[in-house]
Image (cartoon, rainbow, N blue to C red):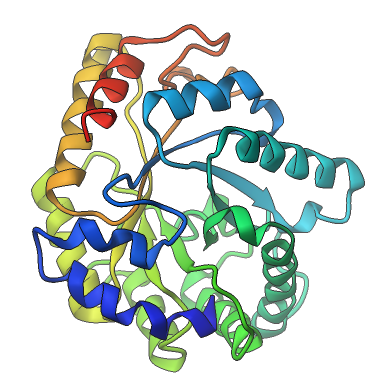
Length: 315
């Protein structure tokens, strides 16, 4: 986290030089090796040893999983987290852990951010040997995932409180944020908030994470450049996927688009990318949300799984 930031500035300089950059991604994220920087999202409640073995064989380099900070007091939930990490460890898969709360802030933003930092520090202490990075929050620019509301006035103070609390703490785990639903762009609320946070605490984050759903390779490239130029940090993709809907060409269309995306992020030298998601989610609220998986919900491979495996093992 915080104290590790300066150690990675040299690696960032290499990344920004262009084509040779991805060879240095492991300097930003030491848990990754060489050019193998693409992972896949799993859900802790159904992440099995069979899943982990198949994910490893498919060529993915890590798994992304989400943790809810306001559920950490529940022993059953703690066991669910530790079991998921144990499954990942047994398969030799590092973890990108995304941490957020699910309820509105119960204190004023800065104080709530300081309390949240305690949860981040505790989780890091428990799982540091397995972590690719800790990602702070997920899509706070959407009201669903920032239930406190008033993003423009509450998000930056919250994260400044977190950064202040983390300041000076010794950790080798990279800290990335904030899993924006759309990458920051000129004049956007996320860019304004991020600028406020980074200006006050320039060493808090090691990378800016975002979710480029529906974006072209050119648009992703422009987003990467904007992030580097404005915040002096690399951009990373902590979530991207395509649903196997008929409007996307069904399962074959999903496979084609995933293959193209993997090729794009390789060419763009993105230092870390996570694909959404490993298996279909029966709990999704609609057909789109239920069909992002590379496998069906009962574990049957879809064409996208073979496409991803072919591309990833060709690295």
